[in-house]
Amino acid sequence: MIFLEALACKNKGRVPVWIMRQAGRYLPSYQLLRKKHPLKELFFTPELAARVTLLPFQELELDAAICFSDILVIVKALGFSIDFLDKPVVSPLLTTEEAIDRIFCQPLEESLFFLFKTLEILKKELSVPLIGFCGGAFTVATYLMKEPLLWLYQRPDSFHRLLEKLTEASIEYVKKQIESGADVIQIFESHANLLPEEMLLEFVFPYLGRIVDAVKSLGAPVILFMRGSSYFVPELLSLRPTCISLDWHRSLQKMREKIPYPIAIQGNFDPHLLFAPKEKIVHTVKTHLLKDPGYIANLGHGVLPGVSVDAVKSFIEGVRLGSAAFNGDGYAGSQIYQLPDSGAVYRHY
Ligand code: CP3
Image (tube, rainbow, N blue to C red):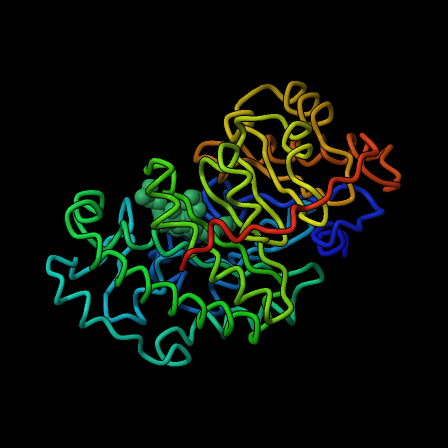
């Protein structure tokens, strides 16, 4: 299982690869299923969600599977309803502070039964590790109100109370995902790039840290994805995730120099690269791939709509070719970086 080995920074084989949003969008087999079933049905029917998760494996050699679901299904457990149109639509949207205080988390094993069942089915079918996931509390919160940034600045106390409730529900949610068969959890804090640094420190990192700690306390690896990650490496390090998933703004080599073992890194190719000609994709991936025992190849964000399956195949081929010579003896730069002792400064919750 080179994916799990790489998460432990102990991979001696080739570089493992999976792709964010690998289960939908660009796959003709997925488009066909979408013609027959609305998205909601695909997400909420365990047999269908499991089938979609497995679709990319018919054509691509991937080293991990991510459960077909969405970061917003959790809001069902908190008394909201959710539909998936062009974008996810949650109702009723929050308009008052009292509505936040009334939010209450129903037992997840009932409200999100379908998701745990999907993981159980997948666990039996898969020969690669299974990734479960949740959204960061801040990102999920942005879908629950019309103007989240106005609320954040005008009514920060109740925004914190909302983040608190979302964090507690997410912790319960990822615990149950692990019990149902997820080997690894990835946290998607996709909208963090909306905020300036001082607001990230107050509204994002402390809550992320609590989910990271909860997953680690169960003995499972946790991957932290945040848009803008390249600019916040010290802060992300202080949360001690198993792995940091990087955006494409800085080179992998430079990022590894700032991210010490035993923290693994994932990413970080520009999703637009997959619109380039095959040769360019293969060459870029082959050349810039990190040859490192704690590295997982992926894009810096999800695969974009309109990308061809052939482009995704070229990406994977680039990873195979680039890692062929890697003998796993250690970091190519041969330097072992030490993690600083204290990261407590970002943990003022
Ligand atoms: O892309 C990211 O930033 C990852 C985090 C994230 C997911 N869902 C994870 C996901 C975010 C921000 C969402 C919200 C969401 N949900 C959006 C973005 C809307 C916006 O505000 O810009 C959309 C369009 C949805 C609905 C949705 N979720 C669709 C239509 C699909 C299936 C097909 C597709 O487009 O990929 C999903 C699946 C989904 N969302 C997965 C994950 C991890 C599982 C599929 C996979 O990773 O292969």
